[in-house]
Length: 482
Ligand code: 4AD
Ligand code: MG
Image 1 (tube, rainbow, N blue to C red):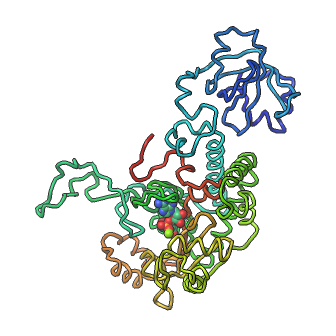
Image 2 (image 1 turned 90 degrees about the vertical axis):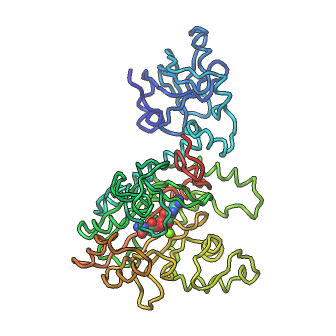
Image 3 (image 1 turned 180 degrees about the vertical axis):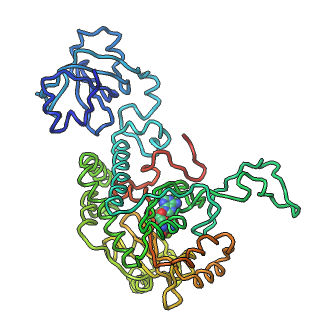
């Protein structure tokens, strides 16, 4: 008999199965009183309860119905008389598909008790089987799906940009190099430097830090494109918001200016929040409760003012606050926080805002998502469009409560001469980006785009506070297990 998923059984349509004999396959979460088996198959958060008459089975089978064992259970689905579940399975046939050895279970996070997120990270191969992580990863899937849906409906084309590339799009130099040369004795050129001509690609290459430059090329033909792919940054930041390998979504739109770019970002982020509210209720409720429990153990001053679901609704219902970098500096300088010398880092026009500054603006000053724009040219990438003041560029960052920067974007420099000057100022050799520069001489148009950090978005919609807990297998400095 083919198996039926628990999600379906517990749905409205599943009611029609009452009275029928069905098969469920999954993993045992708990077995009590030699009678009630809680089975989870990953299709949803809820378990189904199978009730067995243990005298009907031989001891060999009963002894193997242990936490984590994989089982197949068949029986009649009936309305449950017990509390806690609407239906249950009156089992008449049980098969142990894969036994779980109790000694082995004891060594892992599968033993049924509360485990710290740190320990769960060390057992990332098993954490999918916990309620928290199965909820997070089901939501992660739904957000990915929502993103493709959003852009498809709006007429964007999904573009696959290269993972191995010769360019450093962000100009930050934080790249992982890719080479097949023998690191112990690489071939040398006549100057004694490594001779990359003999390397696989005949030149130095790295893992991409962004698909933007390639997305721009396509946007200048297809009109609206987006990328959604893995991105690599060798920045040595061991924070709760940085990964060495993360996923980024980068839409790029011909004929859009900075204002259009902000409107698109805001609409897009609101759509993702709505999608999660509409489609992930069970997991969301669970994570909301989980967060409330965690918060209750914290001192009042450190607690979130509003809960997870309320935060999502807040983002959906309220316009984002938009202001320029220059205005933000004034706000910060005039704040009591600054007057009381509570910021660690100095504030003056021209600085790269620190996360304490961003969080102050979002969480204390405006108490809503903020879009900061028009940053000093020196602290932003070479491709951003120069404003008429010749000091700032048409950049924008979206700052979210609890997260800080979630989106970075800009209108792009479409004027050939200005772009060429920028490349020179940033020491970017013309030969390296000839293809990018050439598009500015062949029907160039104003265009704009942004990058959303996928994991930062997942943090926001799940309430998880460490980015390592929203990607299945995190890569961070000194950590590439699994
Ligand atoms: O601000 P960033 O560096 O912008 C770009 O890469 C542009 N090319 C985007 C564009 O205009 N098409 O990165 C964009 C976003 C950040 O706002 C952040 O959410 C995320 O990517 N991000 C990271 N997420 C996790 N770990 C890291 N190390 C990240 N670095 C950036
Ligand atoms: Mg940025």
